[in-house]
Length: 327
Ligand code: SAM
Ligand code: SF4
Image (cartoon, rainbow, N blue to C red; front, top):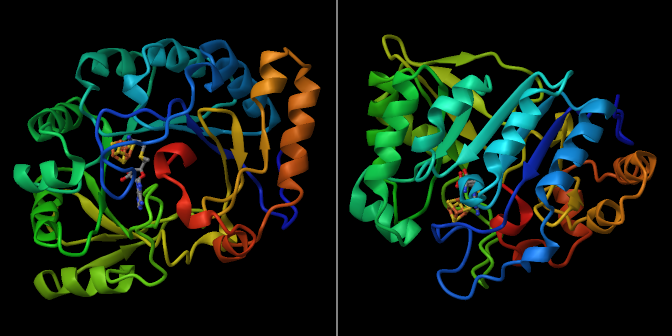
């Protein structure tokens, strides 16, 4: 079992498989000149398989595949096949922009992968294009409907962006009224890889909830696990649910159960802090499993307690891009 220096059990790995992406969401990376790692700096398929096996052996029971966009990686399906065979791994989930997931849906079902988070920040195609800089709304929407009809536990991640997609919040609420999906509204974080930083937020989770409440005053809170980062609600008669993720307000840090490994092998113990170690060389040099284990234990022994503490220790916290951190 993995336990950090604050006594928290760490059983959830967020594994970024690439820092590349076919979209250019403005809140995540710059439209031009995004700084991608060199190809040979990325973990290879064999390295990703090995590090996942070691982490599961150490007590990780849930892995979320993220990026960059996981499905731009050509060997993503062999990795998922490997994960589906790991004993002790209870849950595999994926966060994706869903532009390229369509051809893989049958295989995902075969591997027993049920939990797919789809990032969708607009329901109006022109707004979607403004935010992502690409004209792919229809692919995303069609794939989302396909996932729902195939019985996946599909959830939507919607980053609330001042002056950009506020009008779409109610449209997303209507989606969860009609479909059995969870729509989660995320606070924006200043991880866009540009100089556009902020220390206060126009749309924090309280304001988002007040906005929703104006149209939907009647809802009940759904009790979830203590480690959940979202606060979820159900409206009577609606097929789905909605939730809020205070990703900038960081109300959930106390019960954090997660660790991140980026596409280049950086080990990150908090989104708001710098990488604490790197696994690439150890893996490339085929060092022992124990060497990898010791590195992981070492970083978990020096973890910041909250995102605010991690941010204080890192002057570059707000200079990074989410695609390099691994979402
Ligand atoms: N490409 C995939 C996708 O978009 O779902 C996976 C990677 S993306 C970095 C993971 C999640 O992080 C997405 O839901 C995205 O909306 C969210 N995200 C990215 N940058 C963010 C930011 N600056 N603030 C809040 N959420 C962000
Ligand atoms: Fe790509 Fe996801 Fe970042 Fe959008 S949020 S640019 S889809 S990695």
